[in-house]
Amino acid sequence: MIVQGSVTLKAVYMAEGHVESQPTAVMTDVSAKEVDGAFKLSFASAMDIPEGYTLVDSGFVYFNKGTIADADLNLSNVGNPTKNVRKKSLGGDKTNIFTLNLGTTDANNNTDVYIRAYLRCSKGEKIVDVYSDMVVTSYNKALGQQ
Figure 1: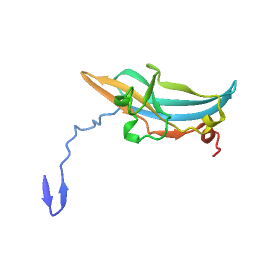
Figure 2: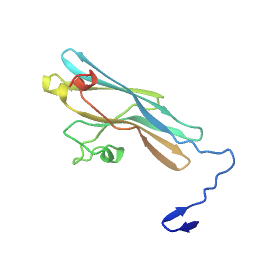
Figure 3: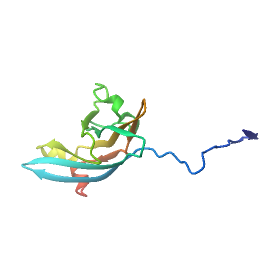
Figure 4: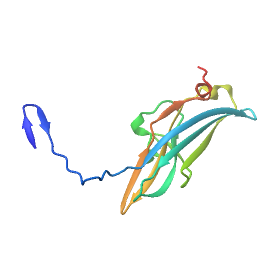
């Protein structure tokens, strides 16, 4: 390591031609529709699981009771009564689609839903949790209304 004033330079060593890939989860679609008077939001995600990783579980974590911080919307808060984060596990498909039923009262079409896709992979003994960016939307927002 070379230290010069307030600048720190660190050497980085990498085996030639080797860059380790990490699993990724991405939210790819949000759509809204009304079915039998109920407001429904559907979310789709896509994932990439590189060689060397095994998919354990995938799905969505979500919250729709007020507001929540980005850092709080993860699997460690599922079932935590102070966070009210819920999970919809969809197993091992490469593309996941989840529909959330918001209910039938008009007030529900403006209820914000905080949601992100997740996947849990293993690599040897190591378990890796990967999350997409958080999406904040409502039925009306998904339809392009405010």
